[in-house]
Image (cartoon, rainbow, N blue to C red):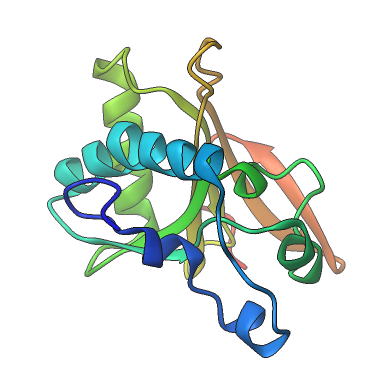
Length: 161
């Protein structure tokens, strides 16, 4: 099933972890609508800005899968409103710069969060704000220190995983 021009539902429901643990990743209509919104309003503009395909590393996670991978109990992945991505042939810094450009000139870019996770070789988490809320537009960098995941505000390219 196509969610937008360049993204399919299969990309957001594929999970090796789920397959290994016999967890069925089947979104309901509300989750599918959220995934469509994420694709149309966040991922398609980001793909166009980068001029490169995006790879979905993690999309929709039902509660059992989210718990298994250590996701937050409040994760937007639970609702189909978030994706962890990388861009083909592009660095995390390139993806971060593209997000910042979109935020600076596109007030209709309803980003809830952009998180650069464990630079320079991690991924970028993006989420879409619900339609009835003002976009939060929060930018963070996640890093590990003493076995814990910590966050700093903004995209910080000096932090290395």
